[in-house]
Amino acid sequence: MHPLDWTILLAFTAWIVYDGLKRTKDSHEIEGYFLAKRSIPWWAAGISVMATQLSAITMIGTTGQGYTDGMRFIQFYFALPIAMIILSLTLVPFFYQSGVYTAYEYLERRFDAKTRSFTSLLFLISRGMSCGAVVSAPAVVLSLIIGIDLTATSLLITLPAVVYTMFGGVQAVTWTDVKIMYLVVAGLVAVVVAAILGFPADVSVADGFGIAAATGRLRTFDFSFDITNQFTFWSGTIAALFLFCSYFGTDQSQVQRYLTARSVDEARRSLLMSAYWKIPLQVLVLVLGVLVFVFYVFNPPPMLFNAVQSERMQSGPAAASYAALQTEFDAAYETRRGAAASLAAARESSDPALLSTAKTAMRQSDAALTSVRTKAATLVRETTGDRNFSDTNHIIPTFILTRLPVGLIGLLIVAIIMAATDTIAGELNSLSTATVIDFYKRWMRPTATDRHYLTVSKIATGVWGLFACLVAVWAAQLGSLIEVVNRFGSFFYGSILGVFILAVGFRRATGTGAFLGLIAGMTSVAWVATFTRVAFLWHNVVGAVAVVIVGVILSEVDRAFRRSLSK
Amino acid sequence: MTSEAPPPASSEMRRSYVRVLIVWALTLAALYAFQQYFS
Image (cartoon, rainbow over all chains, first blue to last red; front, top):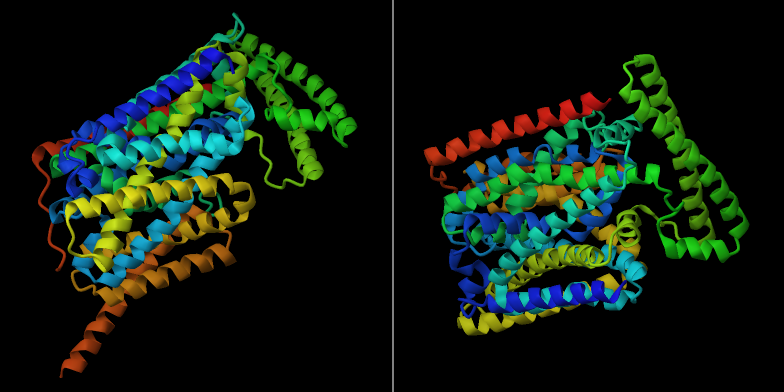
């Protein structure tokens, strides 16, 4: 990167840390540190909710998915607004009025200590490991493109978050989230504009979308009912509803954001902000990928966007095979560019037959080019032994580094890094809260001063930050372990939702019934995940339904058993 | 502690929910129209 880009990157990072550290008002009390004394305006809490989800993986992975796969991923978010309304009507007022610090604390008031501790432990395990994944995915890409090693890149992402979260608590997290969100959205819009400006003069934006549509990249709705397919209209509206209710309603990293709001209605409004803006924001992310695809239809793309791997292949043992693929790729690119130009011209004519022929040629030429890219990626996997090699995460960073002007590059790289940083900050804050409130205060030191809890909270934030760094740095070695843990996480999202449904919806549900229901729900999901091909979104439905059914039945058994004992 | 009914949403909040539903429906309709227009 150019020195100016480095200057922008380091200056912005320093400013974010400085600004976060200034936000320590009321952070000398435990309620101020964890809940900002419930003083955050709804719009800031709402932006913080969205910023926590919009990680660097969205910036590089989802945009890359838009490039390779198009818009169909948007279906995943269709149920989100409905989930927000459901949560606003149900869990939000329960949490807010009971004055809890964590969602799991509510479960002890409703059920018992074991249900609270178990759900909180599940949160700590999954969120702690996901912290590592949130850092490692962008760190691996950024370390290659900006040329510094993986440890330094991981620290560049994690350290700022640890520093301002440790000292500023949730206020620092929320207000830096707001600034970073503005930066990220501005960065996304800048890439969209840059991609459009790179179209040939005689190709309009509408022509660009027409070209993308011919390759299937604008297919947004898939109405087929196939529970093995992750992205259909039905999985996005039914199964994802359970996931979003669980994520926004029972995951401490989200719950803590809206518990900082000034009133229960402001907490509700902060969630409704996501209801309005999440789908348009994801459309922007995916459209960005689609437009960069169109840019590379008219401007030669590399066969593989991972430049480091590409260079290694050109001088490695499979260099001859790779060179042959490159020749094939160059020819396929020229064919596709010609087909795209013909399609743009056909759109100007009013001849449906000509347009149909041009669309078919475009689709076939794109399939041919994609086939060569797939062969190249397969060759990399075979040559290097890296079975997980994927080029998708390198597409947008490569576009930024090679096609944008100096200065803007620095701004966009810092946007990617900060997207990871603010996600980490939110997660560290919630991990620290659950550790201190649900375990330290509950089981070890129930009566201590605020000052003591505050010190322990800061230590917990630092320890979780260190843990995230270690997991990120060793992610390559821990790859399969992280996958296992993430899969484990998907086992209990729906199940935890089931416990909360029992808590607020079934007055006769007991702690033992809920606890055993949770175990049964997780077991059911593990069985479905292991022995069927049902897509993971539907696991949330299986888990929630199993917990509610088993929980209700066992609660009645529990009541009958206790009645018989008391006689 | 047993589950207690949450306080009813204010009329202003109820209007907010209706607005969310309307915007949601319009957003999905716009996305569908976008897909169909270019296909």
